[in-house]
Image (cartoon, rainbow, N blue to C red; front, top):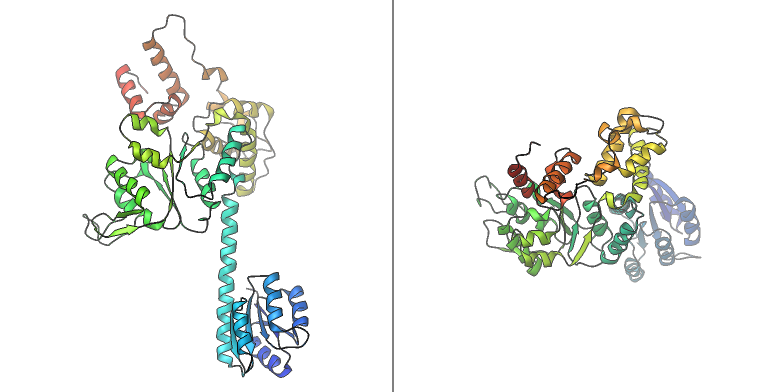
Length: 451
């Protein structure tokens, strides 16, 4: 680990050298200047981690130096040395951003402790800046690839709504990137440095979802051996992302509505009201209006969540984005696995553009990763693609019917062909047909189909 560099600016040579010797013994590198002007020149060239400066000096005083240092590098901490009669100026320095001040004669133990604390504070600031930079890079708009008109409009909408606390409802098929959109909203909002808590509502059973969302008190149910915070409390001051919100039970929807309306709730088994301040972003695989019509989702809750509505188009409706997505994924996996796959043949690209992509962007990403990892080719070509894509023909997306075909037979054939296209995945088939997955199960049973 590199030594921390400390700049001492002191016109009293005896004090400066004594302080320099002390800090060198503590393991620091030390720079010494005899006045503020000389100290500022050293600061510009050496960018030390910490500055210790006297207040009253010729050519440039400590307050002027402090102002210059903070203007050049705000994260640099400054400790001010004050002689008797300059305490008022030391207080001025504190107001101007100094870390602390110490009076002469200097106590070695006190200055050592102040230096240690100042460097710890600076390290924390730099760590937070680095983390923020990583978050901004990870959740930047460039990670949501799309140049199609539909995606450009979504980007514009995100930029417009991100600064506000309005609830957002994101609708899109599985694999379209709803979580990426939620990330972009949160990390471009004033709450970006505060908690971002995610909950997949479909993965939680009816028996535990309330405990997960709202927390519980000790003894609230069998196994509740201690009190526990829920996701709402964890997200306080930040953002809560509820994915697959259509799967929240009706009994829990009432509590969720209360949080949206009043910002408060009680833990399971408790009677103390917990207040929270947060933004809610919800996402669903299908339009919640259908669930409202089927009485499986409360209408009042729907309107509370649906203040801003973002509909993400499936990949088949923005095929012009596919080449850009492929390029992004290839660069990503080249870097991740140390590969040098250079591109995609025209035949392979044409097939990838026209393929059905029932799993949307996620399926495309998995396909590119699989093809690269299994084959590690110079460039991706038809033989490197999975057999189901190689065997695909664009005309398979259309289901032809003869004139006079009964509606019952058309419905059956449409269901059969859709299940074939999704390789038996009933959830994907339901999304493609725009119906509930329970309807798919019922139709399969009624028609006696074997999947």
